[in-house]
Every structure is written in structure tokens, then in C-alpha cells.
Image (cartoon, protein in one colour):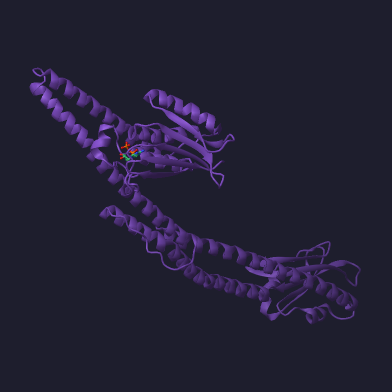
Length: 452
Ligand code: ADP
């Protein structure tokens, strides 16, 4: 069943149920009120009539006496203890009542009774007869007027229920339209996206910032995000396939050369194996970096811990310097120790990317300076005196696969992925990175971190 019909049906059903329950309660309460009032009136009436008749019994003939007290729609009678009617007078409208069997009661009583499918109030009161015996004075009164009122009430309540359902149906229709319109337009847009394969957005109308508007806005943001990611992925795949094509072509051509002339020419053999080996290593590195980028794009697991930065960096750079046989000098920008809370592993990865670039693109000593700036932020500067980056290239080096001097960086084993990974890591650990460089003079990479 459609959402719109469901809303209509449930709202109408619930409201109708509520109205019916309310009207039944009103009807039953009113019914009880009327009967109670009729019973109490009958009680008072019979007491009065018994008293009056008691006084005149013996003096006035019973028939005449009863006739003067007969109700408009009912009967009055005297009943002896042996249930033999002594005398009864019936109003012209209720002649059938005279055929009703007489029953003697020992005490006074008032109740409703049914006789020939009609409702009556029946009250009975003991009365002392002139001969000293006890009889019952009984009055039976029709409840026709009360029944009429109740039937009018029933019709009124029924009509009210029906009439109240009309605005309910209209308002539930308006409500369901209000809810289902944005949902349907979202479904249409999604179907459109699926069929055309193009990203589309919802048209957001009105300026009420309700949940449905927010839902539409969220949907559009999600589509924006998907589009950006999709474009990034496309770009990434085309870049990756383009970059992997070169080493694969080199490997293929050297392999064919080996196949043809490798056995006869040992010099060629060594050169080909070297080239294949180095290209294979490059491809391995690149694949690893690509995998890392793809994986980290999904989610970074940040594990923060408190570190004494200066001591930690000294220890970190020692391993690097030993592995590459390079001199790395640590410069203290601030004399006091620097304590910082960060993800140790990620920061190490970040520093290694810049150190590795400094190593690749310079031959001189590498400096690493640590200190705090005027905002009390911690900075780590990796300074080299190498080939540097021309100013017009500086903004591009963070792009994936971007290399300033392709031939040269290829030789040095560069993939063009290091700085884009650095940017992702820096975002993940809330660090800022900045490159300043001068062609031919060297490069300074600055990592800025908040203290906690
Ligand atoms: P790669 O693996 O090629 O080094 P990066 O993303 O780390 O990739 O760097 C992108 C490009 O920026 C490098 O190819 C290089 O041309 C340039 N570059 C990065 N760091 C330095 C540096 N310290 N000195 C000179 N050039 C650099």
C-alpha cells in the first residue's frame, strides 16, 4: 500500500475510533443520567401518591382514587399479597399494561422493566388497606419520552461522527501530500540518477526548515559528496593506470629484448634485469602507496598518546639517518621540553615523507627544527638545501602523481604520491602542513600541531 494511502487510512481510522469511543461514552453517561433521574422522580412520586391515597382509602372508592393519580403514559394499581389485582387504572395510551401479571413485593422498590418491547419505570410501595391488610401501590410509567431523547442523541452523535470525519479526511490528505511529495520527488531523482548515470539534485522549495526540507538538503549534500568522490575515484583510476603503464611498458620492452638477445649479450642482460628490477620495485611502492591512500580515505584509526617531542624526534631521525647514511641535524627552536598529544605512528609517517623528499632532492645535510610559535602551536621544520621547487609548481606538488621533474624524480624512485598522502595524514591528526621552497636553494616543510 502506498505511503499516502497508509497515512490517510491510519489517520481516518484512528480519529473515527476516537470519535466513536467518545460518543459511546457520552451516550452511555447520558443514558444513565436520564434513567437515574427518572428512577428518583418515580421514587418521590410513589411516596407522595402512597401517602395521599393512604389518607383517602376507605373514604373514596378505590377506582376513583386511582384514576386521579394515573400517570399520562402508564398505569397505577393496587396489588394484594396473594398477587390478585385489587384494582388498576391505565392511561389511554398504555392499555396493554392492564394485561401485565401482578406481583406483590414485600418492600418498596423502583426499577426499569421491559414489557412488549417497551421500557417502563416500575415502582412499588407497601400501603395499608382500610381492612388492615398490607397491599402494594404500584405505578408503571412509560420511558417513551426518555427513549425518544436518547434516540435523537444517537442520531446527533452519529451525524457528528460522520461530519467530523470530513475535515479529518481532508487534513490527512493534505498531510500525506506534504510528506509524500518530497519523498516521491526524491524517488524520481534517484530513478533518474540510476537510469541516466548522472548525479542530480532535488529542487528544494519553500524556506521552512522542517525535517523534510532537511532531508532534501541532506540528500543533496550526499549527492555532492558522491559526485566529488566519484570524480576523485575516476581521476585516481585514470592517473594510476597511466602511471602504471610506463613501468609496465619498460618491463615489457626489456623482457622482449632479453628474450631476443639476452643470452648472447651479457651486458644487455645485466642492464635489462636492473631496469626490470627497479621498475618492479617502483610499481610495488606505488601500489602500496595507492592502497594506503584508498584504505585511509575510508577511515583513519587515531590513537593519541602524550609524547616528549624533542626526545621522540631525536630517536625517530636516528633510524632514518642510519638507514640512508645521511646526516640529519636537530635544531631546538625553543629551549624547554615540548610535550604534545598526538598519534605517534601517523606523525612519524608524516615526518618520514618529508625526510624522504629532503633525502631524495638534496645531497647536503638535512636539518630538523622543533619549537613553538607565538600562538603556542608546535612546529616541526624539515629543511634541506637541495634542488628546491619552482614557485609556480609549489601549489601542485600536493596533487596525486604530480612530480616537478618527471625524469629526475623517476630516477630517484619518486611516485608523486608522497605529499598527497602527507596531506591526508595531516588532516587526520589535525596538523597543518606548509611547503616553502626556492629553486636551486632548498625546501622547508613545516608541520604545525596544536599542543593538545
Ligand atoms: P615523490 O614520490 O615524487 O617524491 P611527492 O608527492 O613526495 O612525490 O612529491 C611531489 C614532487 O614534489 C616531487 O616529485 C618533487 O618534484 C617535488 N618535491 C617534493 N619535495 C621536495 C623537496 N624537498 N625538494 C625538491 N622537490 C621536492
